[in-house]
Image (cartoon, rainbow, N blue to C red; front, side, top):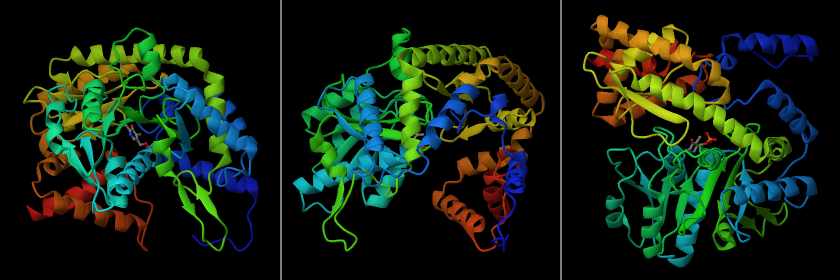
Length: 466
Ligand SMILES: *Cc1c(COP(=O)(O)O)cnc(C)c1O
């Protein structure tokens, strides 16, 4: 496609855009268990109004639009209060979880290097289940990750942290909960260790920040994870996940301005003027900032609580349903609405089960190490859990009665990719696939699993070699 010579008719453009989306996943039918954190059509309509009110405003310069700075400060205060911070708790809005996590990496790196300027490479101690955003941040900012294995319940093994601490350790990181398994790390124990060794502790609660406080209020057992735990120095929480804001909003909070100051970037000599930036982006979309504020205002504590009840009821049904299938088992003990399950029957390959589920129209996320399937529950799923469980039962039966399915199609590819000992090969092949996607010949490539997306593209390479 070339840039049209003359601008086209607006109605025609909008109609064509609708046509582009015909192949997209229909999230409103509850078929997807990741990517979309959807509250209700009514909530979305309200968010759009709030967003468009500040469509053109820019949060780049915190002093330019008083409204945006006010939204930001008030979102930070509301979040700090919810997570039991005090009057000293500070923070910024960011564009999402990845930015919040990457900023934590940069902040603690800079804090360490300010104190020990002779250190070449700062280190961050993280659980193996930590979100990949930390790996990305470490890669971008030249920090070394020291990964700690998980225990039998998929929480980080605290006993293995101590020996990784050294003079280069910038911070320890925990998840509340982890994305792969939905399990909260033993944060009080980690915080005790961090305090003894005078090391900051960041809690990545991007996923749980706006849900766990309410799950706790409902009386579910929630391990302590927030500022009530002495030693927790910062927390990231995504408004565009369970805060039900518009996409492009997350919060990073610090116990003290002495930490936050290392996040800021200042250039005093730029010909464009003295430049002071609180976070990663330059231009910051006013719409996302405004919608973040509006989302918290319209939900309120009662709304979040009500919402948590709906989500946890669905999650409980889902967990019971999975536990009633003898061939399957949940990984660890999920603390909220995110979970993974695997096969405990040699005759049932879990990736083959995923294939069957996709044939029934579900969009299924696969995990590796160990092989498992993943689900994240939103209010939208309430009416679909029963069908999901019935289809899962049927899929397990089908796989059990049809030996060899694990050797076919995507199931075979996933199985093989998981077992390839040379991870460098996988990385190389994934890079090649990205170059195809973004290269000069880039077509719109169908990435969806059911049509043989990433697995098939990676798989072809390995199958050829065999
Ligand atoms: C989603 C998530 C992130 C990254 O957030 P994005 O908004 O996708 O950039 C980080 N940590 C956890 C635990 C997450 O679930």
